[in-house]
Image (tube, rainbow, N blue to C red; front, side, top):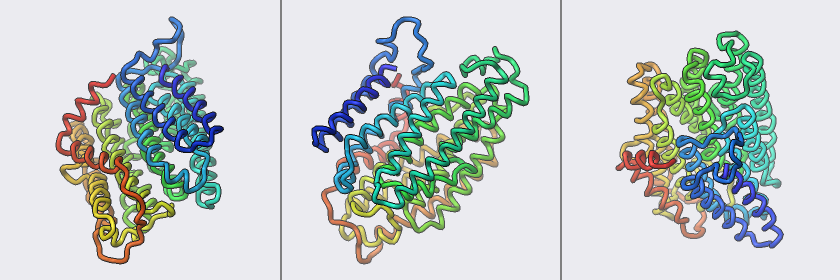
Length: 461
């Protein structure tokens, strides 16, 4: 709760800093606020300033702190990459940064909720902020369309979540998920409760863009500004999946008979649809949107094995590796294409002739997403597959392995184009940001010393 309070005040402070007219100050103040929040989250008791016996309906356990640390780390990285975008579009950096901070507040709530109220407030704080961010580029028809689609479809998903909550409350008379899962409210076998759980599952699966609730993400990702698309694909995925894992992998783990089959087919559909549709895309952003759906399918493995004790360490490692790959890739792409939001695969041809360092970093990022050995992505998939094998989910494993092969095929397309000879369209631009080198180095370190990364996460909280 302390970190959420601090960030809420920091968001207001950054907003008022906008009156000074110093764009860089707003950006750096937001980044410093997020990094300070990361220190507070890891090192300070979250209930320190709360009156005794005050019920916050938030529980920052060790797992919540680890997911929150990922959210804060990657949010800081995204904001650091936003300088050129904010100045190019003449966007009010104070408003942009403050809305992004408020979305992070919603994300942190999704890692620690124990109550229907805090789950809903977290989802809406995150969601409403994203509707604004997606439409930040007011001069772009694609950005406006992206915001409108996300608003309408996000409202539909919220209705599913609320309807599910209402049914669960009607069956149990409880709003606290711990009490509901313990069976103290009774009626857990009723049809009303079962339908409520399914509606709740559908609503949260929409938020993580899992099949068959994935249809919004390619259009929204393609229309949104590159920086916002990066934020959505990394930070929002971490926050949404933290909520899904907390709800079904922790609270409702013992009630898996009610939701397991639906989750199984969502994972299977996400793997197959995501990878097959990514294979035929010409737009790089749409390809990454469909690949994001497939990554959701791999992550769902961790919830499907919750009956065997869960796989939190695997989830954290996978999200960490995926986030690093996206940050590394967009550190390069934002530098190469400062004036272009919709990047096509053909635009990458000949890039190595102008930027050899950027080409190497982009190659490392896509190899990691493909799950090639000696990268973070390889061990991320391994941490998903190993528990699933122990649980006997062989059909899902086969689908996962086949999907990985398909994924390698379409991840090789941008790599081949980067190293192909031809007239390059990339901008000479400035030097690559240090975040590009740092992310690429962490990808390789995670691939060489995965146990070190896992032990680091275990040390948090």
